[in-house]
Image (cartoon, rainbow, N blue to C red; front, side, top):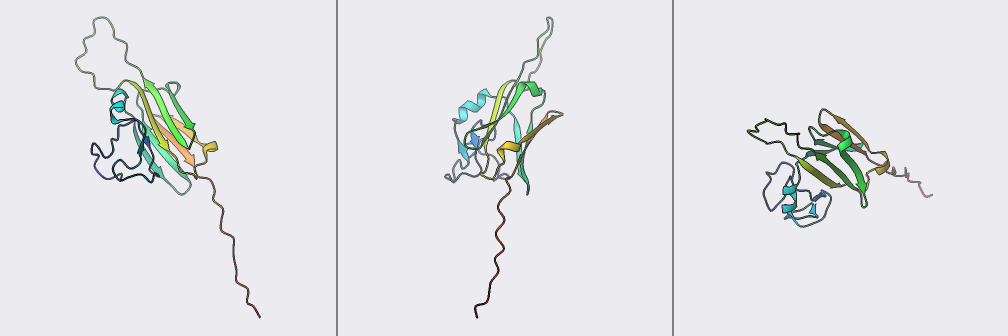
Length: 153
């Protein structure tokens, strides 16, 4: 699904909806839950990549110009990871003439439902050069017991 072009009505990548890739929902809007599409227009955008390795889920968010003191990474009930923060407007100086303003400002929030095997107690975060990296380790799964057959005489 990540390689399919984004189409309005199917999935809005800029939405603040809860992204749940593990949902068993319908095909239209699969993985989406929460707010309506219109709520996303009030939020500054935070582009996010989510990849899974053998040992962890790694979520990377582009959040340029936001200091770590201005953002939060939280775990909510039901394995929901929430990344939120605030991009502040630059102070206008007397005599300045603005010709164009394209950078997003305001608050942002992205929410992701983590799978059951997420180790919520050992999540780590790092912010470097405007990129937030959240690493959610996987819980170790029980290895199957070694079963051997015994001949009956």
